Each structure stands twice: as structure tokens, then as C-alpha cells.
Amino acid sequence: MPKPTKSISLNDEQLLLNELSQLIEQSQQQLVAQANSTLTMLFWYIGKRINQTILKNKRADYGKQIVASLSRQLTEKYGRNFEEKNLRRMLQFAEQFTNKEIVVTLSRHLSWSHFLILIPLKKTEEKLFYAKKASAEMLGVRDLRKQIEAKTFERTTIANLQSRADNPVAYNTFKDPYFLDFLGLQNTYLEKDLEEAILRELESFILELGKGFSFVERQKRMIIDGEDHRLDLLFYHRKLKRLVAVELKLGKFQAKHKGQMELYLRWLDRYEKQEGEEQPVGLILCAESSREQIELLEMHKDGIMVAEYWTELPPRKQLEQKIHLLLAEAKERIERKKLL
Image 1 (cartoon, rainbow, N blue to C red):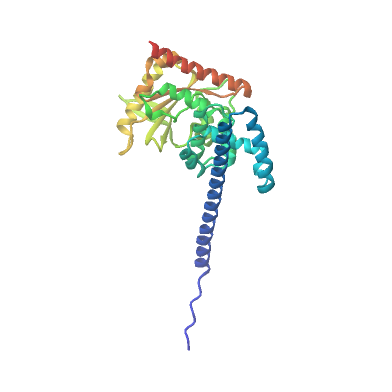
Image 2 (tube, rainbow, N blue to C red):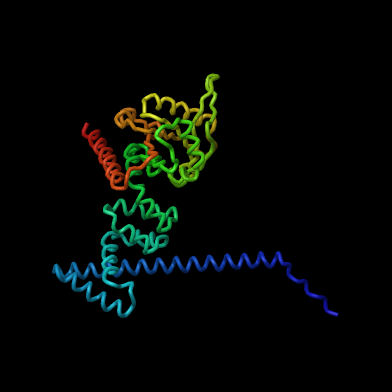
């Protein structure tokens, strides 16, 4: 009499089902990504080819005529993707993103919808900044739009100008100013209130700090010469492989804040830094910056960044003007220093 076959257990069946589901979903995601990449490259090639034809002809009215004519024929044959407004976006796309290799790399992670958000931006470096950020951080279209609306490029550029080329560690890591409007603080608050509000909204605060930051400890205790010292917030940055000390200041930046942060960084370097980590860096967040003092103190050489925090944001138009003014002033200070 044959032995009865051992039936597969429900648990084993569920594990198998989960594994197969994962394989199917991964393949579906790869197919979607591949389709997106192929479509984006197609649009780039179309834009490039039409641009070449228009340049070759050298007649001002020819561009309008050829785009309208091609659009009618392609739409009739292949659908709405090739309507005139879309065809003109393809021309802009190829004109603005001229390096094929960069487009190929970005198209593996960004959809055509991402590029449609990037095309209206004015500066090439701004487009590439957001494109690389969206690619590296796997930002969706909505999150990319939020980054642009929050002026992340301009604020990162201001911070980069403070750190400059002789301190590449901080490049594209910090911002100035930081937007802390999500904390909901009123006009009058204490340093302790600020810290507690940040801890309540820690996830939002880390998102504003940027990718790579992980929270370690609040009110980090340091005993130096028998005296207690307390660092407001301690973070770790995975990419930099460094501890990041954060001090919160209610008022305007003062020169004495530098000495305090230097002391904390030296202590962290001696007692907290783990094997394989780099030297800790510091971020002093002030209600108001003292930009000339910061420049004269050359704090970037000691791995210290200073940035303002704004607990209330002005209306969008005023916000844009204010950020652009800060950026222009930062660039002017750098140029003035070069002349000196």
C-alpha cells in the first residue's frame, strides 16, 4: 500500500505565496521603471532631433510651422502624448538637458512627470540639483514639488557658500535658513520650549534637516573639569559618518557660541566618536544670524555651521524675495572677500 504524501503546511504555503508575490511585484516595478525610462529617452531623442532640424533651417517661422505640422501628424498616428504643447516640452527638455549620459542615468529613477516639473526652473544648476536629489532620495512628483516650493536649492546654496571649497564635508548637507514653522511656536517662547517642540515633531524636524540624519540624544551630558555641560541635540549623519551636534539659540548669533561648540566637538571627538567615524561637526541654529561675525570667525574651518531658523514663514511671494536676497548677499560677501 503506497504511503500517503505529506501535505504542505498552511504556514509553508503562506511563506511560498509571500515569496512569489514579492517576485511578481518586483518584476512589475522593474517593468514600470523600464517603461518610464524608455519613454523619457524617446521624448529626449524627439526633442533633440526636432531642435537639430530647426537650427539647420535657420528660419524664424520654420520652427513654429514644423512643430505644429509634426504634432498634428504624430497625434493622429500615436495619440495625445504628441500634441503641440507636449512636443514643445520635448524640445525644451532636450535643449536644457543636453548631456545624454546624465539623462540616461536620471531616467532610470525619474519619470517624465518629474522632468515636467524641472523644465520651468530657470537655472541649469538648480534643475540638476533637484534632479539628482529626487533620484538619490527616490522622491515622488509631489515630494519633488514640495522641495522646490521650500526653496531647498537656494537654502542649500547659502549654506554651501558659508562652508566653501576648503570644507567639502558640509557641501549640500546643511541649509540656511531652516523652516521650523511646523513647530507651531508663538511669538514668545523659551529655548526649552523650542527643544521640546522639536522633539514632539522630531520626524518633521529630521525631514527639514535632510536625508541621512538620525536622532541620537537630547541634552547630551558632558563632564568637563568636574562641571556639567549639556548639548541640546545630538544627531548622526550616515553618509558623512559623523556625529552632528546641534545647539539652539533664541537670539542673535554671538561670537561666544563658537567657543562653546568647539568645546563640545572636541569632547565628542575624544569620548563619543566610534571607530571608522569621522570628526564630529556642529550646527548652531539661531533666531538671527550675524553673517559678518561668522565670516570673520571662519567657523567652517572648525567644522561648525551657523544657520537661522524661522518659526513663521511669510507669504510665498515675500518668502521667495527674502530667500533670493539672502542668497545674493551671501554671494556678494564671497566675491568681496575674493577681491580683498
